[in-house]
Image 1: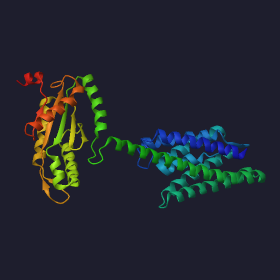
Image 2: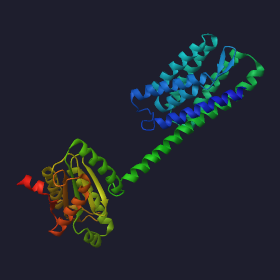
Image 3: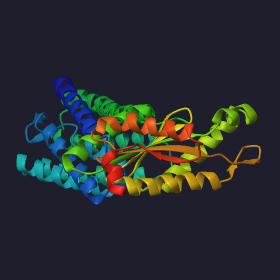
Image 4: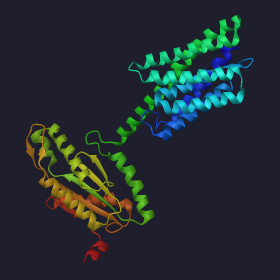
Length: 367
């Protein structure tokens, strides 16, 4: 019976921690977390500890469970504030179950474990040693108090070793579950970022561009806003690769991406769509304004000295195609096609220039 109840506590504890870690992966508890996060985490730990008390082993007025593990966890990850918060909730919960000698000693147990854990987690030692010392300290205090309360040799012979084993198991497995979920989520976030990011420049890749463009285009129609798209291509980039090598060509692409990010507005979307081709989605931007931004990009690139890894400086130019919904383009879905055509016109008519997608409406507006 003793082993069964303790194992039930472990199962409930692990399941709860897994759900909690999954649901809070965006803002995991740490010592640098906000006060709100620490208090909420402390409250959740206190609730979990109270749930564990509902599955306790009962020896007259004495109950035995793993309520100290949630406190140890939040103390380790969040520090004093969540630990004290959960401690008070555990004390209140224990007194609701019954106010007697056992509950008073349980108060001493929880306060002692909380203080010891907070102190140990501040020491300069490895995580495993901290966990071991914390669990050992709590087991020692528990043993002293339970011997005083029960004074039954046959029960204590089974209870104390079982509690020590299960307490160590629950503690180390709990930490393992939290660390495992955090590592898994970090890897998932990393893979998501890599799937949407160009590995060389750090800009959005073509997949992310397509996703962003579709979402922004739908919003532009709904809000009746103008939306401009720039297609940018480096002039004679093959000559750069052939003359200086692909490594130096990559350096040019990296530097150009910085120029684009620093030239457009902070909320505009810059992407590398492949090779030497870039795009910029200009939100709520009419043709005139988009043309100004395009010319600024073109001029900055033309006058910029690109530093190669060899220390040599070179100069390049870019051609830019521009289309704008709903001035040069009647439908957002046509922006990509028409901006690409405008880029082709810029390439065919001399390069190092901005070409705007032709539109009778916009031309008459300009006239």
